[in-house]
Amino acid sequence: MGLNAVNERRDADKCVSTDIKNSCLRLLTRREHSQKELLTKLMAKGFDKDAVLPVIEELTNQGWQSDSRYAESYARHRLQKGYGAIAIAYELKQNGVPAFDIDNSLSAFADSWLEHLEQVYFKKYPHDTRLSRSEWAKRSRFLMQRGFSSTLINALFQHLNIKFS
Image (tube, rainbow, N blue to C red; front, side, top):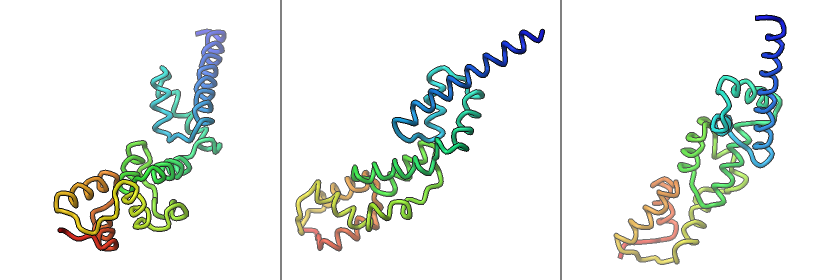
């Protein structure tokens, strides 16, 4: 390989790296993304994984990308949509953010999980103090699918004095 070929190769690598960085920045200006999301989206665009990883690492070091910022933003959005801690933590793990302290990060948005659960419950159901077992199970399943623990759901039903008819 001659000196000319080496220079051309270096210029081509720099050009690809610039394209990757521009694509990343374009994605990050719209909303926060996890490192895993960026990697997946860039690989779908046809970029090589070995070329993408150093660029994502560089953007993370420069502060353009942050998994903790992404997790907080994502969790706040899902909380506003009526989801509980279990569902949010699971979705974050699926998006490549395994370690996230949801209780501390969202304490400003959800004063207590019981209050949040109560809001989600009343948005869907009227306040009935007498429920059949099947209706109680139906409502419990709905809340569990939203990511609330059975302990918290039982505490809500006790708090609202909901009994079986």
